[in-house]
Amino acid sequence: MSRSRSSAAADFPLSGVPADVADPMLPHLEAVAVEMVAEIQGLVPEYARPPESRYGRRMRWAVEETVRQFVDAIGRPDMDWKKVTGIFEGIGAYEARQGRSLDGLQTAIRVSGQVACRRFIKDARRLGWSLDTLGSFTESLFVFLERIAGAAGHGYARAQGEIAGERERFRRRLRDLLVMEPPASAEAIGELARSAGWPVPRTLAAVAVRPEPDQAVPVLPPVFLADWDAAEPYLICPDPDGPGRDRMLALLKGTRSAAIGPAVPLVRAGLSLRWARRGLALVERGVLPGKEPLRCLDHLPSLIAAQSEELIDVALGGRLAALMKLPPHRRDALSRTLLTYMECRDNAVAAAERLLVHEQTVRYRIRRLEETLGGMMLDPDRRIELLLLLHYLVRLDPGDRRLSPAEDA
Image (cartoon, rainbow, N blue to C red; front, side, top):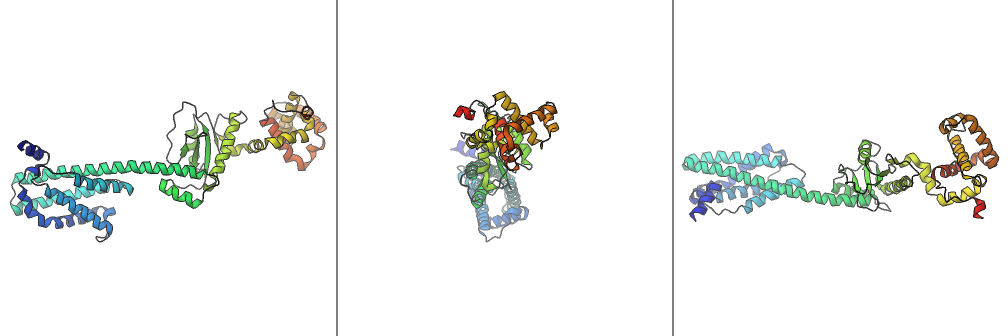
């Protein structure tokens, strides 16, 4: 028993002080707590609340209970720390959930310790304490403050972990809600974004990605939402045409292929993802370039044509029947020449530069095409249609499945 008391006194010197030393202090505990609260509120602005408010009452209770626990430890070798550390674990958790650092709470603990030291000096004079007794109080105070500060830090860290888990769950729900079809309301998205701690952007873009099989999942800034586990992985990038664009492109470096959907309002993320996935499919077919992340809006004709392949396939056999009957190599040369010529505003010189041929070659091929296609080339009402068909034939047509009308018959 004596060894136990000696060990307790070494850990917390007040445990070895006679218990009756506490008796003259008990009537003054409330006044001490009031003084501490006043000092705290004067130095920590976020704690300066009206005394009769719910927060003010809870704060005063916590301070009074802490002071009482300290005094109750006098002469008790079996002090139970659970109650006081439980209080401060709860306070630390509350600070975390309020989004504050522990700086304010640590200041409050330090200020309370200063008030306690002043009181000890007064009580030593008033009650005739020995220097050893005063030393026990002072040393025990440091131990006490260290324990409650540690408890606050533990509660803070635990709550932060819980908050991070909750926030991540909200982020996953938000990510799924954004790309949902039919789209969710802006109000529903905004409410979930607040819960997830995600700043609502003016616009966003979905990015379809195809990571390398063994590629580690990149660490993303918190403004990006991602689903790497989806059958077709994707990211949500806020404000893709603003400051976020460079960060997004840097993140996509190293992925096997990626396609960036159009920038859209918040409620149309599903549309952006749909087109991003279509763009990625064309990259993987080898139709569109894939060395750098593909921006879908830079390849509108290809994306539009790819969504109408069946109709275009039929139209080619009708509108361009004469061209489709030519041998493949001849058809390819004429198709590329006409498409480039039309893209260059019917300028043979500019078309020749792009095709790396002589301008007379371009003019010769155009005359052949006029003979082959007849009036369609000169019909302004058919120009867009002709451009679309040629674009498909040159840029998207897989070739091996193209049949001429004669072969169809």
